[in-house]
Length: 489
Ligand code: ARG
Image (cartoon, rainbow, N blue to C red; front, side, top):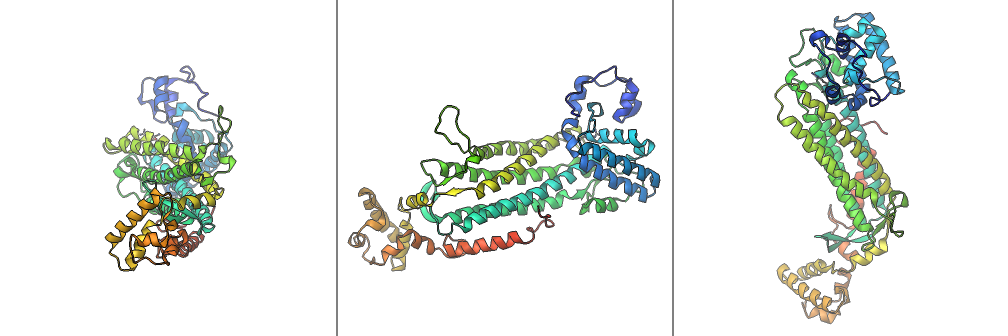
């Protein structure tokens, strides 16, 4: 049942009962106003933590029982009740109530309704402060694992496209001016490097997300003989948060994830920008399948690259969330403050946006239609092999600066007469440097230029094929260091 449809009715229950339902007894003399209730409640957005909240409660209850803090029967009843609640949540039958503020109180209240006193014992040696920090870390750990898998799928799609295009020549640009010929494969593999680093970075963030806050209780720890290591083990945390004040208050782990997500978004946005420009008829290097494009309501001829445009646009909100979270944190004294409830929406939205974008981009890259003829003819223009002519002269014994000057004069002449360098006659070329002989024309071809750059990291087909093979091996094997290999999707 949705939260939105429920309006607060002050006559619905007497004051103390409502307060008790909220989880903090008869300390108060009047109910919160409807407006304040709406303002302070997080149930509309934190209910998506229900599954991890239940998981954490099960581990906490098991530890309480093993430590002799609650009885065996209590544990059994708690397990039974939480299983039913999980089922209700899963099948959308759980009656979320804004009167109960957040996901934790909603679940605890329902548990008590289902199993009575055992439910009331679950919150022993725990606070919502360490509970919510734990939930968030569990939730984010799963999101990170999924996104590392999606990053690998995107890399695999890029590598597969690249494997088809090691000989496809396109102009490489600097300043968006034609610079030197590169292969389309080499260009795509640049993005594989970026997304490989993003995957690695998420693995490093994961290691710091994966620490257990539970046991910190409200802020100072608890007087009960709890076993934090046991809870960590049950929940798959690699370590404990070492200081209880820090455990309940800092959200640096979420901020760090958002920073890593911002870098992913930045990389996707650059790729998007290129796809958009390449698809413009002015370049016409690629086409996107119709399923990634939309038309115009007024101009019948239009086919617009909406998906990459939106991805570029959504980068703005991801950057914004990072700044939002940094700002959320910066003024807070230790330990927990309600400010932290504001961590969820930006975190969730960042993770959702990155996930959807990665999903769609793996498909989009696989569907790219490459117009090799257009790329090639563009690469043949703009004197893209001028550097090769200069390098040729250097190999003939001319000093590089002199070679650079000689070629600049040749380019000027070619431009004046609307020809490419390779279209100048041997005689004309020798007019700029007499070291030139007939072998020069092979060096001025696009293939010759690419083939010359055969060192690791260069654009020669042989070098790019090696890079492709290395990434194929990595993607077929275990995940990058920084976290355990994510299970295959
Ligand atoms: N809904 C709260 C949050 O998201 C849970 C913790 C509330 N703790 C408290 N002392 N009010 O942060």
